[in-house]
Length: 188
Image (cartoon, rainbow, N blue to C red; front, side, top):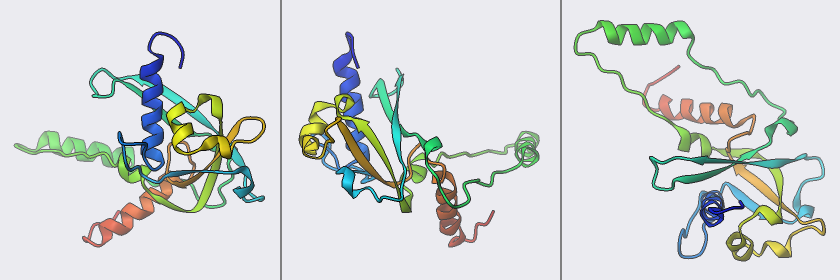
């Protein structure tokens, strides 16, 4: 977040925190409540803390062209349950596509469930930390992060819902989707 477009990148990162946390000021009053800033002593002693990874992209087709995403370093976390997510086989996908192509006036629909994946509540929370120097100042001020920053400058974060990078986010979202669709008589 340096250089000529520092302000644009900083605002993009602040917007990501707004969406993940509980908003910021008048610009974005609510967020998804996915993350909560906590003091280090609120991290359970039996839990590992991981890093946060910042992914920045320029997307000219979007309203917010300089997008910043915060992902979780899931490789350092230990999830005790199953993390594999069932998917359709390549054969199933080919049959579906070939059937659509081969059938006159057939139509094929596809949707993305990214918000469903990201908003999936977790029973077992995860934890990460970021250095206060990389967190945008408006977030530091809004959430009074200097009050909970460690002497080394680390801010601890409790993750309560699915985020990119978490090993278990896919299977938890799948289970929630499966349960939801079953109420409408749809099954894998």
